[in-house]
Image (cartoon, rainbow, N blue to C red; front, top):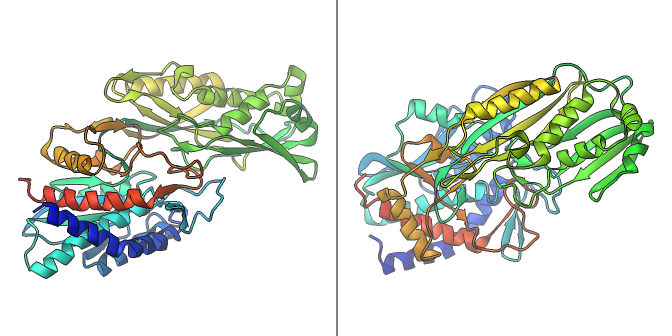
Length: 485
């Protein structure tokens, strides 16, 4: 099926539909599809924002000639029926992480600038989701013209809770057979064949730690556990703020809010929890500032209770990004190094505090060892530790015919010596028996400094990268259809 004539037809198709692609990406980016289960209702289990994006995604799929289905609001799919019911599938998601702080453009619109698209979700994962639909639309047009179906059914799965629990896929796989093979356009090229284990947890103080006699009134930072916070804020009584401001370091600012209260803000460098290099956790920056006070000053700021113990816990969690401060640093040849992120700190209405942790770990350390270190830290700090999601490391043999097919296709459009890699991020691929993550971002391309990464402010992606990815996906699907699946 795939020859030079076919590839020229793909090139012409991408040029023809590109403005429609961008328009459809924009229509999804304009929806703030952040999970909010507090607003869940029948038919929208992840909240109204996620559901609106799911519905919009399925509307686009139907307009592009696919047979679209919503699955009670949990997830959706759209098919191009083939001669066989066995499926080649692409799975992407329409939910996003919160916008966070630090944007210079509207996060909920697409800004086109010097060949880039900027906006929350253009890279993770609304842009790639739209590419999957247009890849399927290419074949829908071919089938309509020739009257001959593809050998296998081509399915686009529309995820809706990837950024949180991936419970959408659990729901799907309980009710539908897994595809013979699927890939998710939700990572990097050349190809992701493995993902580190993922673990989330929460430390909580057992009692109120702020209130009467404490200079710190509130500590707040971060948006989600799997994002490194670029900003954190503390509300401090004026008499305590003087001690802090005398020790201010670059990236710390303050302003009076009235009623004898000062807001102290720490600015760091945000990013994805799985890729801590070059980031600076603002929560840790603020914790270290507050702990730098002298003994008498600390009594004014932190009181005599458990607040200082909680801040020391936060400082340990943010001191390094490899877990070495806790003795859980680990590395193996396949998955690389463990990463640790304290992503969200909150002060609750009762005066207690909490901080989340996100760990991406290789096979050279067990989950029990990681949890044990956290529980020991919690005991020393007078906190409780609650376990959250836990996912074992995932790996697919790069020699699989399907993997080789995708990688060979990428090599034609990218680096000819590219090899499959493993990552710290978690994608839908780990939920399926035969799957991988495949683009669309190419880390070999150097973006301008004003282009943000996924989960960060000013999230952006090159239009040329997206165009090339769409071509790669179409050619890859054509070749997958020729395999014995």
